[in-house]
Image: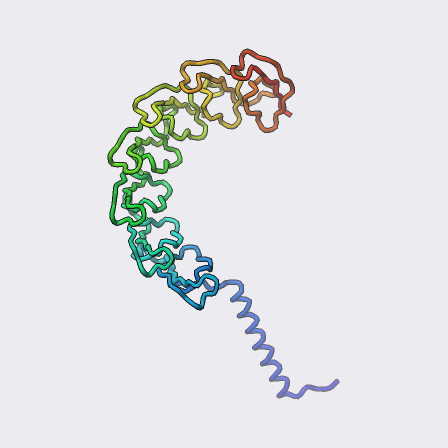
Length: 322
């Protein structure tokens, strides 16, 4: 066997070592890509990274296709920005506090001032702003500081509240209901305000008919009520959490796992004039239901017949667990 000269052997060792270092560095770079921070310039047809905003927009011959370049800024270490172009995405948890004409925002000519929601419980925003989850519009009024809509909102966090007044264009947080609706000059745009109540330990409540009905609750009564501006109708609603059967109005949502066993005329259900008897499916393996009833998953219709106990359709089904 031919022996490799010592100087060639040392050179080969160095080359192999360098190749190993390059390969390792390449693998590390591939495994943990570096994240852009600070600011950058991109073309207008390029995607904008999550959490970044457009702070400037201008003509650029270097951007074939769009002909527009954007200056973008990372918001991860910021709590406010005075100039964000209106075509920019708004990061989650940020709101628009001002809107004005801006020559540095080619395409729209409008810029926004943004603020990040941190410890605030109330803040004034422009009406085109996203509303953070768990916040409501408590006031709406004309504002010259909101170019584009000319309307500003005062918004409030409901995190530590059990009741709140909100304008009717407000989002209704999950688990809250409308207990009252009335005309209000403090709600520009609709002129109507709501009293909202959080569902906590209550098992029954009176709500206006435009209220969301929480999951697992049903409408047991519907009647005319002047305290519900806009519809003039109120509902009595009931939690089904500890119930196995209940009488509801036919406009009621039907909780999952419940069926309609009878339907009849009822003057206590303004709007439809029809009530249902509902039964919760628990240990039953067969039941008779009205034809307008949902059929629970895993059940089948085994028979069909005329029934005077099913107002509206006059037809009942025999159902059984498959």
